[in-house]
Image (cartoon, rainbow, N blue to C red; front, side):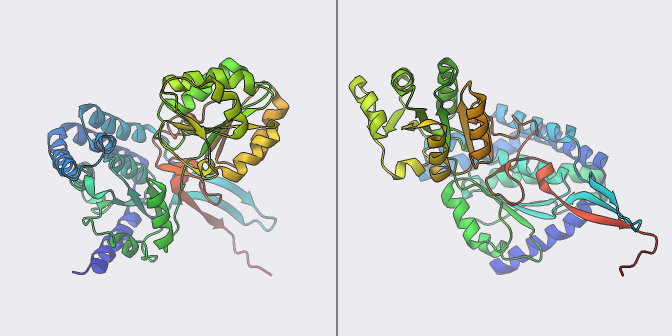
Length: 428
C-alpha cells in the first residue's frame, strides 16, 4: 500500500466515523469519555511502558532535557490526563445549541444550530498528553480526530489512542464509531501533505507547536488551517501605572513559564516612568537570569546600573519580532499609549498584550486599538488559556481573524447550519 493510499484510507474512515459521531447523544458521549478516563487510570503500566520506549529512543538521539521532560508520562501526568477527560465530560455539550432563531414576514422560521465540523487533523510535537486532550475535545463535539504527533512520541500516542478507543467500544458497543480516534501510523513527513490534500474527507487542520511546524503545515495544506505562528506578547507599563502592580505582572508574564506562547517577550515602558520603573524591574529580572535586550533610551537608563553577570545588550530590529521562549526579554521606552499601540501592531503576533494603568481612558484606547486575540488591562498575558478562560481543556490558540480567535474550547470546535421550517412558502 502506498503512502497516499494509506492516508486516503485513514481519512475516509474518519469521515465515516464523523457521521456516526454526530448521531451520538450527549449522555452517550459522556459515558464514553468517563470510560476512557477510567481506562487511562487502569492502564498506566502499559502507557508508561510505551512511553519508556519513546524516552529511550529520544535519549539516544540527544534531544534536549526540556524536550525529554515534555515527553515523559509520569504518574502525575497520567492522572492529570484522566482528570482532563472527566472534566471534558462534565462540560456542557455545544452541539445542537440554537445560535439564532428568527421568523420571516412570510412565516418561514429559520434556526441556526451548532453542529460538528467533521474530521479534524491535529498535528503536534512531543507532549503525548495532547493526544488525550485533543481527542476528548473533538469527541465531545462529535468530530472524528486524526492525530499526528511527533515521531519521538509515536509509541505513547498510539497506546493512548488505542486505550481510549477500546474503552469507548466497551462502553457503547456497536454505537461507538471504530475510527473516531486515529493516530497516523507512520513517521514519514510526506504523510502530512498527503493527508492535508484530501479535501473531500478532511475538514480542518490544527497544528500545535513551533513556528516552523505551523508554517510548514499551513503552506502544504489544502484544507483550512487554524493557527498561531508565534506568541510575541507585550506588557506596556503606562505613565499612570501602579508600579507595584506592574512589577508583579511583568515578572509573572516573563518568568513564570517563559517557554509558553503567552509569556511576554517585550516590555514597553512609558518614558514618563522609565527612569523610576526600569531600574527596579531590571534588578528583579536579573535575579532570575533574564537577559535584557534594550532600545537605546532603555539602554541609557540601564547600562550604568549593570553589575556582575547581568546580561544586557542593545536590541536589534529582528529582536522585536522574536518569540524567545526563554529567559530573554526585549525592553523599549515608548511615548505614551499611542507609542505602545504602534509598536505592538507593527511587531506583535496578534496573540496577547497587556496594559498596566490606572487611567481608564488610556486603557480603553489600548483595548480598542491593539489588534490581538487577547488584550488585557491590569492582568498578565499568561491568562490566555482555555482553562483560565473557563473553557475547560483547550485544543489550541488561534490568532486568525476568520473563525476562532484566542483559546479554542468546545464551542470553537463547532460549525453551524441553518434549519428552515416552512408551511409551503415559495419565493416570488
